[in-house]
Amino acid sequence: MNLSKKTFLYSAIITTIIVALMIGYFVLMLPSLYVAYMEDINHNSIKQVQERFLKDGSYKEISSRNPTATFTLKIPNAENKLLLFNGFGNIDITIDDPILKEAINKIRYYADNYEEIENIDTSEEEYFKNVFNYIKELVKIEDLPISIKASSNDNYLNFEELSYDVDVVNDNTIIFQQDVTDKINYYTNYVAFSNYKGDIVVTLLPVMTPQLNEIRPIILQSLPMITATAILIILIATIFFSRKIINPIEKLANHATFIKENSKLEIAPIEIEGKDEIAKLGETLNELYEELNKNFKELEEKNKFLKEQNIRQEVFLRASSHQLKTPIAASLLLLESMINEVGKYKNTKEYLPKVKEQLLSIKDIVDSILNLNEGTNGVNIDRVSVDEVIKSALEYHDINIKEKEISIDINLKDVTIDTDRNLIYKVVDNLISNAVNYTKCGEDIKIILNKDSLSIINYGGRISNDLLPHIFEPFVSSSSENRGHGLGLYIVAFYCKLLGLKIEINNIRNAVEAKLYLN
Image 1 (cartoon, rainbow, N blue to C red):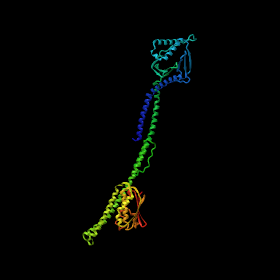
Image 2 (tube, rainbow, N blue to C red):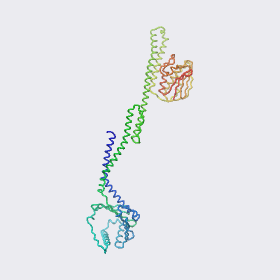
Image 3 (cartoon, one colour):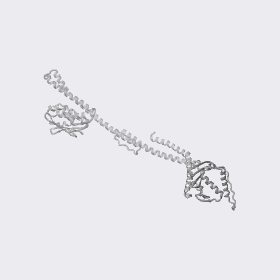
Image 4 (cartoon, rainbow, N blue to C red):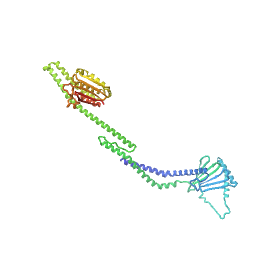
């Protein structure tokens, strides 16, 4: 199963779970949350009505959950009045009856001393019942031109109290909440009582209590549309975002496959939009491919260098083997002639030194080969004073220079470079040795050192124009009379390549110049 199908399957499972949770929430939790919310609204409504009335003393700026049935009764502190307020108007009732005045005074007393209400005796309860009956008698109107007879339905007035709660808002205000039912409907009566600046303020707010069975059918009717819409939106969003995720991953996979099939690793970096984890992965892969490409090129360069080294060593060994045949054959011939006492070779004292010369020639060739192989063991970079190296090499060749009565003209500046001390010495030593060997007796050698280059000029010498392009090849010599075996400049070129230096050999006026560039 590919990533797209997996993503779609996981999205379908998640969608099913989410829709199931939504249905459970709408059916089981939302109705009860709605009922609790409406109870809070109604409770805050009676609280706001009471607070607003205490502040303004009227209903001009007051709105409530049930404006037609909400009213406030105010009993002034020092007046025998009852003030009734509603959103439709006000009623001012003046009390002249002494019994009612006394009842109002008792209400004021208990309002100021509400803690005594819990300990009220039966006589006080009886008193207020009598006052209530007295008021009922007062409101009977006689001598009307019509006759009215009223009766009540006992079943309809059969209310059952469900709960009762008291909320102390502050030191002056208390809210009473009573939940009742008539077996059909549910009601909540809120009564706010305040003793504000000596005035007694009572506000009544009756409301219908919302029920769960009233809300749940509406939700159930809406569930099919809600479910279908939710599934559609979730699936569309999932498909969209899954493609946003999968497309960059497919792009990375195709890019990796393309690089796998491309042996040169010369690939343009992949571009992934955004700054998320996939974009970071793309950046990391680009860095990886760049590093691989760099390493690949380095390996190619090393392989090329090793291949060149192998060719050089093969040529060098073959040439060395060929060159060694001459002194070995000469030595054997001399020795065999002396052993057999053939002609002039009976004089061993004269010809043994010649054998020695041939053996020394063989030794020089072998030493050169060994020195060349040592150069492949590695380069140790250090701070090297080039002028000191030149002085040391000149001291080493001092005997040969004096024997040939060569004049040395030195012009050296203090020059220090980062290089391998042993290898740079061998380069300088071979250049000086080559200059001494190919300078005739009594001629001059000039050595010039500055910060950019070292020049060694041997006067009186010249290299054939045909030989000059091959001067750095092994066993190339410009003079058959000289003892050199043509390895000196080859070794110089070899070490210069290891050190990253440039060497040039050129004919100048009546001289040959070897120039070593130091940077």
